[in-house]
Image 1 (cartoon, one colour):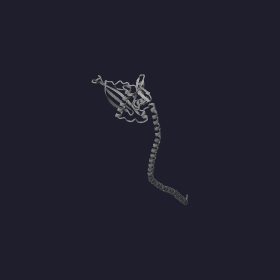
Image 2 (cartoon, one colour; image 1 turned 120 degrees about the vertical axis):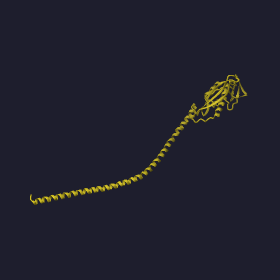
Image 3 (spheres, helix red, strand yellow; image 1 turned 90 degrees about the vertical axis):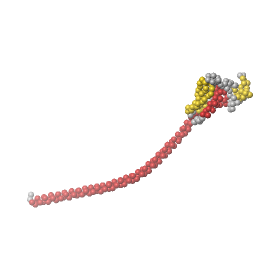
Image 4 (cartoon, helix red, strand yellow; image 1 turned 30 degrees about the vertical axis):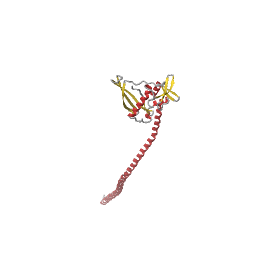
Length: 276
């Protein structure tokens, strides 16, 4: 290779190197521009991030509306509570329908507390009921119902005298009076055992006297009242028992428990007897 050829080769080689360098620079510049463009996009991205930060603040601000929304939700809960009360209100008629059932049960001798609360009795009220019951019970077991000795009718077994106890002018009136003090089974027993003592004539009630007196060995009575429940009262009678009829030597005491129950809208004795 001569000198001239070698020079041309070197020149072409250098020119090719320069040309390749220029191509590389040209390629790099678009890449840089792309990078710059990418960087430019990054800046908007950062800017978008700032709006997100700004959005965060609105979000914080929107939290207050959400808090406000929470309050309406709380308000919504109150109507829900109100609707619950509205659901409870219709249930009341169901309870009301149960009450008539309790009232219907009373004629079948069911406890009367189903129909209503029993009225409270004071100790004096209980004592008054006991004395009234004792008096009525004595008409059948110890003495005779008040009568008029001047008004009587003659019968095959003797004279019957007109009863002058207020309000009692017939056997049915006597039964009604007793049922206001005793339970029906006690009234039925008393009337059955004394069926021949009472007769009716011309719309009036007559009785044949039959007295026995009291037990002379029995002394003073004392009383104790125990309220077993709202519808039952235990009434305890303690009576002195003497060894002699002069009542000088006390032998001991007898206790008798009687029970008042509230039934048919009345306080009545469900068991009873004379203690002397």
